[in-house]
Length: 263
Length: 263
Image (cartoon, rainbow over all chains, first blue to last red; front, side):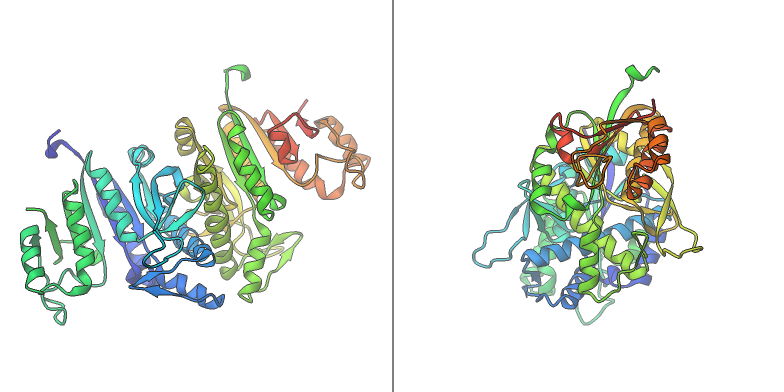
C-alpha cells in the first residue's frame, strides 16, 4: 500500500496549559468537531493531581519532572486522570457533536506497559509502554467514535500504571502508522520549537531530522525540548508521517507552528 | 423473532457489599470469566465516595438513601466511581481473561439522562435515565469485550449526572431486551428476597408478578425491598426475561436465590 492510499489518522495530545485552564479547555472542546477525519485525543493533567494530593496530605514527589507513584498517588491519578478530567472531556465533547469514549490503556486491552525497574530511581507504579493494540480503537473509529486517552496504562497483571502522556500519544501514533497515514499533534503553550527561548516569535517552522541533529549539536535547541523532540523523531522513524508542535490553534487555522518530518 | 432464537445477554449489578470488601471483589473478578456468554457489569460504590468526601471536608448529604450531588460531590463521585473503582475493576478483569472496557453513560453516547427536577427535593446533579443506545455496546460485545458501567450518566449538554446503579442495570437490560434474551442479576449481601427479614434462610426462590402483588398486599415483603422489586418487575414488563436476586455465588453455582419472572 502506498502512503497516498492509506487511511488518515490524527493523534492529538493536549497538556497542562489547557487542562488547567477551564476557559481554554472549554473553547478547545467546543471547536474539536471542526478537526476533520478520524482522531484520538490524549490528555495529561498533572496539576490537578498534585492539588488533590495536597488536599489529602499525601506528599507529591517529583524527580526530573516525573511523579513518584506510590499506591496512594496511583489512586489519586486514577481518580483525577481517568475520572474527573477524562469523563468531563467526554461529556463536553458529547455536547459538541463528537461521540467520544474515554480510555485508559487497560480498557479494551489497548496499551500494555511494564512497571519501570526500581533502579536507579524507584518511580513506583510508573509504566513504560510495551505494546499497543489498535483493533478495538479501529472498530470504534469506523463508527465515528473518538477515543479519549488519559495517561494511565496497565501491566495485564491487574495493576494500573502512571504513564507519560507524550509517550502514550507517540506510541498510539506509531501503532496506527503501520496502517494509516498518521499525524501527531503536540499542543502546548508555545507556538512551536523556538530558536531563541526568550523570543516567542522565533518559531522554527519546519525541521527535518538532519537539521535537528545540527541544531542540537550547535546547542540552539532549548535543553528542555530535547527529550520531547527525540520522542517526536523516534515516532517519525517508526511510521508516523508528520509531527506538529504548537498551540491548539494549529488544529483549526493556518497558524505558525513547527512541522517535523524525517526528510 | 421468537424468544428462543434471540441472542443472550446478562446484565450483572454488584453493590456496596462487594465493592467495599477488597477480598470479596478480588474473588468475584477472578471468577468473572466463568460466567458464560455476552455480559455487562454494572457497579455502584457509595461508601468510598463518602469516605473521600469526609477526607476533603465536603458534607455528605443523603435523603432517603440518595445522595445530594452538588458540584463538589459530583467531582468526588466522578473520581471514585469512574476513576478508582471502574478502572481497578477493568484492570483486574484484564488480568483474569476478560477483555473489559469501562463506561459512564457519556462514553459512546450510551445512556442519556435528565437532571432530576429540583422540586420537591433538589438532589443536584442526579439524573433519571431517558434513553439507552446499545449500538456501540453491541459492537464491542461481538468482539467479546465486556462493558463495565459505573453509576454516572450525562445530559448531552456537557453535564455528568449521578444515577442509581440499580436503575442503570435495569435500563440496560430493558434496552437489550428488545433484541436479546436478557437476564438481569442483582447481587447483594443476602441470598435473595426473604419472607422473614430476621431469617436469612427464608428465601423466596421463585416469585411471579401476581405472587409479588399478593405478598406486597399482605406486607410480607420487607419495606426496603419494595422499590428494588418494583424496579425488577418494571424490567420484566419491558422485555427482560428473568431477574435474579442473591449473592454473587448464584452466578457461578446452583445456589439458593430469588428468581423473578412475569408469569
